[in-house]
Image (cartoon, rainbow, N blue to C red):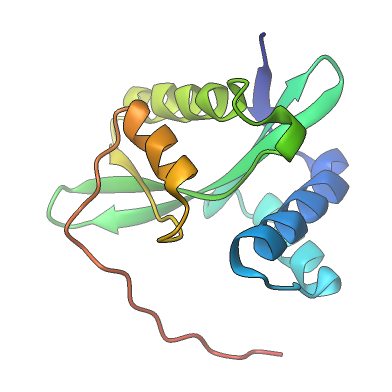
Length: 153
């Protein structure tokens, strides 16, 4: 099965909102505020230097998406590409959708002389996703992720 992978545009906002909403509910049992989520997606689409979304399609159907953002590494004098907000609807899982998205990201990052590598984070209990990432050549790091979240309403 083949998939077309392209950068998301404004015509994809509804699908990105639906995918992100479903991903948060499924992975973290979170109900995201839809207006805030839409505003966040539209903000990134308006500022591509901060990152962008990719959409995978089979024929005319959107079958998966992910978001890319960038982190500067002074140790490497380059940027890590962070893969985030990965979502593939259940009926499309285990059919190569994420592999197609990942290959697209890897090829683009390798072609970018400023790219240092790819990174992502995954829920601790998501064994299926971890197996997929390992099968694509990613390795678990020794870092733990900490955060302090600000409620900006």
